[in-house]
Length: 111
Length: 114
Image (cartoon, rainbow over all chains, first blue to last red):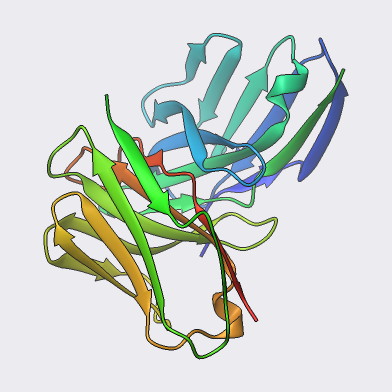
């Protein structure tokens, strides 16, 4: 069963704008990961944030984690057409050898 | 550097036929290996994971089975395919002793059962 739920399901923006995607989950986690998937391809790992971390950066990506609200956000700044893809959050629970993926957010960046 | 291969890329099979999808990893030893299925427009469902040769854990009861005959080889099989087995199958690996770290995915196999 899915643990994380992304919001929105789909997002369409213009090139240069920022894109924000959210992920909510229900139970305490060990870490949360964001992945990207281009259409018909495998997933690519973007960022891993642990439960004791609040924010991480990687290039134009910024991930925040609020464990009190059981939510995370992925911000892509200055978006490009090449950022068009589906973005998934995956949660890893404590004492559980398991990674649960949400249904994803489909991001379209228009040139 | 590590690479992960899956084949075939696309497969069309009749209902009731057998299935064998293969995944191999290069550039690492003793990886954790995983099989996921992704329905159209959905997230990933973990099917099997393996922490070593001959060690397979199944997440959900289903028409599929997995085997790990060699350290870096993971095979997904079925004796008789069902229509509901159609989907996008992804293999992944990680270098941790648990499932709690980054996973690296293969390019996937798209299976259509007719």
